[in-house]
Image: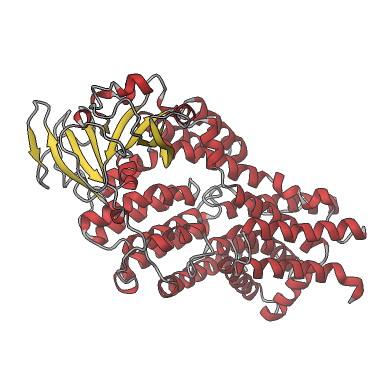
Length: 609
């Protein structure tokens, strides 16, 4: 046993990683880095060749898959900041008239989008859209949010770029195949993991999964009240939005446009282009250049500005000396020493004096009367402004405002660039899918195009990257390498084969089940990086191609449906939808079994196990 201390140490580190992440003992990146540090220090101090060198242990951070994931986050940032996601799905969702109709119209495009985009930003971009949809149809958002997450997971299984686990497993697979060929000096025949190889399992699993979700959601998912509601915010903003003369809202009623069901926001009145003021009724038709007076909470006002077809009245924001991609939303509390107190916004020439446009005004829970430009400013008013980041630096030391702060997710949308962002994404996916260039090169090209065309800025692209996810993946790859070099992966594969009796199909089932359990307890990327080596060793022992077993790990690592913690999108909708752990088990366990049966059957038949 003593001469195998490296194996036992590595197994202890892997188990510690599983336990630490499952029990949330510390932040996920810290736990992953701690496990990697133990392996690196043990190798450095002992000089053992059964542990990876320092360079090999940290090579995961430079893995092509990790770099590609980081680049894809930036590509999606351009799509999100231009409203491209809403443009691709909003027209379809606006026509839904029932729960089942809403699910069909929501789940299909989400599954398709998730095949070509990272699941997390897709779900994040659609959360406010789904909330609005639930309000309009008068159905609980719990019937929509968890199906939204599950549809994104299913769709992500269908391509290599749909989820981070697919990219990581594919790159580990190619790297190990190169090492095996170099060691043997012979050409090893392995089936390639192409762009659409995961669709072999992902496509039938997605079809069956969506049928299951739509058919059983009404009975297996109870209606729950969300834990947080924007309508509970006691501070109400009064905001004006003008209907674009050539926008998609012209000619539609308030009800058809979805403006009567915005969460925490309502249309108070409509000011026509000829000066008439009319009360807002559901069947009231919207015309070009109408000005809508709305009242609601801050989060709702931010979401409102994501809608296509609405703009700030009189083009005040467009007259700013700052381009749209350099503007953000800012909250400013007016002080008693502000020179504008007692004047209307128009009289005070706010835009000229501050190079900022007033978007909305809040005065406690009161609704302010009249047009926004005619509101007389009082000390204590909270102004929602569209301004450049430099406004913060200029005014924080000023006596005009008590408090100045940026609004979370307040970046100004560039709706005019949405078609361009979608076009860039299509080119990136097309180049990678047709194998014209590598996925990494296509992603790099996409980032440069998004930044170069101002769909997003360099800083926005940088902020969009989930660095904690990349740290976990890089650390897990290093620990996985230690499992291989120490012989731990070989020992685990031997134990797995003993359970399966050496039968290839039974081995695939056991490997799939073990990967799913790891995914539900920790994270999908970490589970994939750890289980890959066990799958590779198991394939070698039963003398079969590693491709089917590796593909099984790839699918199983994404198939997190039973807990809110195994996959990031499940965590995102957990508190927002007011779910309980029981909801995930009751609704997600049958779906997990459906995907597992589909994976085992299709992989076995395709690869002749």
